Image 1 (cartoon, helix red, strand yellow):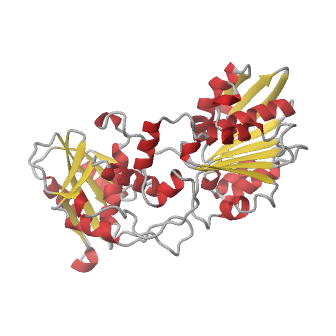
Image 2 (image 1 turned 180 degrees about the vertical axis):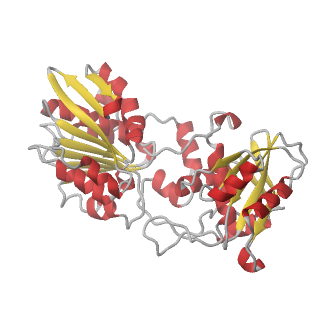
Image 3 (image 1 turned 90 degrees about the horizontal axis):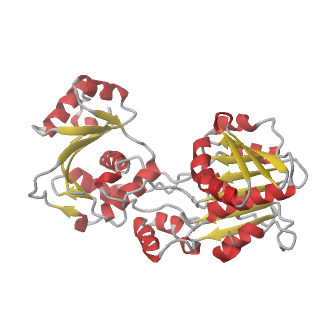
Length: 416
């Protein structure tokens, strides 16, 4: 592939380490910014070219939040390109290892996942000639610093990529803001920097994000989450229950003991899901907690005589899920990725794939009260007025696994 097919920022990433580059003495490169901005692919390709040009018999780390995400986000698109360029690539999946050959040289690349604080121990003991950390903002600091400590071979360099988080994030403060001090080259990306995105696709991505997520994932800014979570939601998003025959029925549940329990009844007509009714029980206000069996009866009453194809339930409510299954309900524990769920819910609402009916006053009320926590470290919502919000989020996350309902439009949000 010729470098003329890359944007100027991508060409910079491809060549920053070369002998004729003014940045060749830098010890690290940071590619941060928008999703789908083209940074991950060019960073990975550049990393392999650098490693095979500078080392023979070396060991390198390819790091992501999980080993599976490294394989999916980085290696899957890269391997065909590397082979077309003449690299020999042999992957040993069982050993999480990649052996690459080129021009008589051979190097080994190990896959590591930086999921949590315990992950730092996985990379201890290895001596590295370099490391690539994809989605570095999602990794714990202990894992990142342990990886950097392993890069002790003369001439080792480190390669970072990430989407922005809040301005108080440790990586932003310690690396992005101190790039010069760290002898790192920082190249910020916006979505518009990817020449492979057509105007139509670019417009769709721009439409898919709102508020703080637009600024982060389209413009590539490190900005704080503040104010209402769904700041676009108003009376224009509320509709009467349609006079249409629903093709399918489902229920979503957020379970509480002392906190409220919220359930939503959803009907599908075509590619749109309508929240036509809800159940909302606040044990504190009522002065009495209900049992799992009582909540199961309440769910039955909400369903009425409708055939419920699926119940999407709070994954932490193990006893409630068991009680429902004992009653014969088809229950699916929800995906509880909060930020991804919020983005997905916002996207589906704006596209009118999810519609809140005026028969759901508690959901409508919570949309106006659901806010970001300004005092939290990182992106967190205030844990009040979030019960209907959680059951709606669970439902939205269950839908993106089923693109057949939405054609090719719906896709799980991917960090890149």
